Length: 492
Image 1: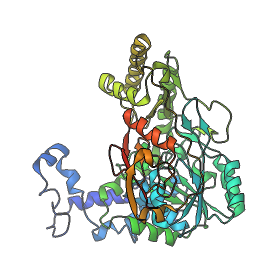
Image 2 (image 1 turned 45 degrees about the vertical axis):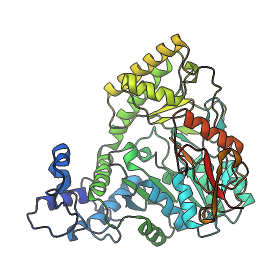
Image 3 (image 1 turned 90 degrees about the vertical axis):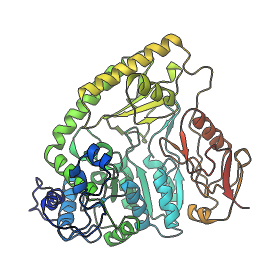
Image 4 (image 1 turned 60 degrees about the vertical axis):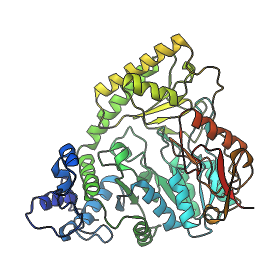
């Protein structure tokens, strides 16, 4: 990587701006030709400049699949800023980076060790690669009804049992900002010559402040996939995948990304990645200092509200929870007789506060560099109002029993996710599907953690949980029957 790059530059952004100012007759895609053919209501709403910047891969704008000029320079600057040896820009979200990382490390039949609470994008990677997952149940905290990370001892045990595994994948951090002991996991992986892949979608800001958890690459991960759009200043879908060290073949990762990436990448997304990198390279520490200040203030005020609990640490010591991102505010509302889904709906409708992630017991709020003190004041006031109303009325949840996340025992899969996905299927009643092999990938949204996955035997607890979370407001995705009365299973 060249040390002569100027971090103040944003090469894609600057070149794109110059292209929009050059007068010429466009006979190339997209069809709206610099916005002139866009529907008038869109240009009136969003303004013409955004469409003028919606350009294809013109010669001066480089090529995402074979970068040699501005994209190459922007990616090198990003690698330098995020502590990587090499970085690739992603316009198909972190999903494409996760799937590509699996394709680059695992072939059909290869084993990969990972937590059972992975995002559905990981299962897509297993289906496409043909890899066989070796699942570990992360530490579960019943008081919070939340899963933490994988402990190093669990990873070591899985590698002892499966010494032929090709890779380990960690979710770092979890949606709630919880981090496992990734340094210890990285040491174990290096001792076994096993690649460590980090789903760091929610941690791209870690590099930029000492009071945030250690970034995955700095801790020893070989690959990190980050959603720059989730907490930094990039457009939705704009993500990055980083590699550090020489244990992963970069050419195979590049080839894998090309299988998954649009051949018409959006320069609006690429420019937003470039600009977000420059913003963090120049002002990241100051921006994160202010963000952390807002997060600490919010947490202290919410913790003082009767009837609410704020996550500060695990109920009991665990290596699955060794650090926490203080920009995540996790509030337990169960003492109000409410589910997180109900609390989210009330906060939105009555107080104008929208959370990132409602779950059966909790609501999670992301404080990022775009938030203001006014936002924090409104959040605190909304939670105060929620607590006053339901502590007084006492009827938020009625007599319904608490809803606990089902224990997803990581038994060996009967089929690989790929084989189950492509197998002949039949549709049966959900109540009759217990112990049958799922042919569907069924996830409640939020948070997108698969409860049923192709190749795995269906448990009664999983069926009951999906019915219950659907009744309480979660959206089930991946099921052929939206009502979840019927489910697809592999033919016997």
